[in-house]
Length: 243
Image 1 (cartoon, rainbow, N blue to C red):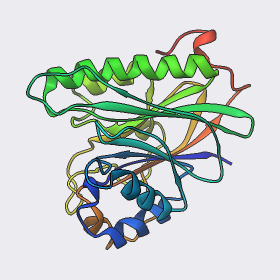
Image 2: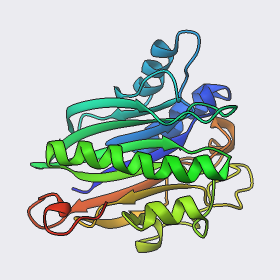
Image 3: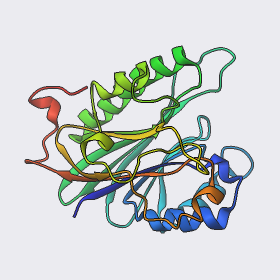
Image 4: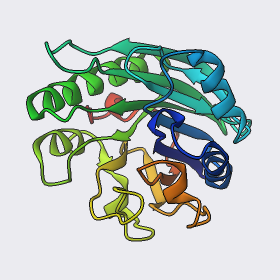
């Protein structure tokens, strides 16, 4: 069975939490990368509540930076970690959350990021996130996947920087129109999932959620990629680095 990886900016659960829970359930994600995860009052409990709404558990993510990775019962969690990215004065602190999971005897390292509105910070953090994800992948012999709110589109520098190392899943096997923002009338694709060469993209884009719930839950649409491990599951970098 393909590994279902999803990415979703949940706007700190400030909207219709019941609708949000229904969307997360409909995603049927084995791994869910969250951006704008709760990070203030009772943040741990609120993240646990968010995860439980879809039958998931919190696998990785620190308070600062507002990113997290949630995992479902279909995968085995091997490791979770969180890193703050370089501070840019006057800008919000950014981070990456990474969970290493195993499914069908294969290991995958999944990172969740939320890049900045500032172009310079965005580009720098894209490279920094790739380096941290690569380190986790190397350490566990895993295939890297990076997902998140990129805050720019595919022709722009930070997106291109990521896509040089990992495949943008949507163009490979698109499902739906791919637009993710704003949720009520989406006109931009600024949320994405990128995967290593050792992962075959079965589909990317569709959510399976009730369309009526999507604009109620948050201001972004989620992205879901179905990924199948090819070959023997050996880290692609051992034969020719992809990051």
